[in-house]
Image (cartoon, rainbow, N blue to C red):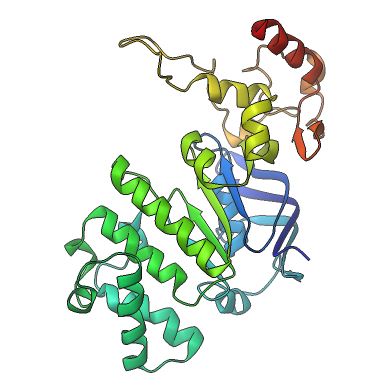
Length: 330
């Protein structure tokens, strides 16, 4: 049985312009000890998917489909039951530590809180464990700094504190939502190495959300490419990078700067703009921005077609895309 099994997950949000489907028929699974990456532009549904898994969606959100965590259905669970899971069996690293951390409480109190709530540790025992956690994630002189406040730490150190909080109770599933946003390249590498080492050490399942193809390439075994709230391509990271087929995935890869990109050279871009969630086309969400678009693309959301075993793309024109790729390669 997979650690996490998501089937046909959809999330509908109510806006002043009407209902908006932030996530549409998303399906994937994650085994214990496995790493899964989710990539796409801002507004594609990555974070909303993570919030659905955590039960942290707005009150007006309507969720359909299934989220099985070790065989237990999470969709429709009450807040009390979800609170028992969050911070205990499922941990989450949020993308902005200054909003994830409470500015009026010391970092030690915040790291110790899940230990007291979920493990029933005394204040003294929780404090001792919090010091060990802060030391494990690389906070220098943790015993002295445990009573410091978030604003007294650097951005990279605050992110390490949020990692300590997420890992305090040894979760089975760790969700990392853009965990290196706004950090410089050196600190980013340290944070990602730390997450990878801790996942391997504790045998957790990891869901890593990013907009950075390099981060995904180096840190996960499988990946999902999302656009318009839908998974448009999925497979092993190696296969998607080597055999990318969906036009949106091709556009993402084409927009990357390369080693041979000349100084001042304009990068390739995807034409058009990301549609508002309330204005998504009835068919393929990428229709209109895609140069392969034909009228049939607007009829309905395409089913996933197999590219190679275990690798799928939602595009009815994969044969045309493949032919053009072969032509360019020749």
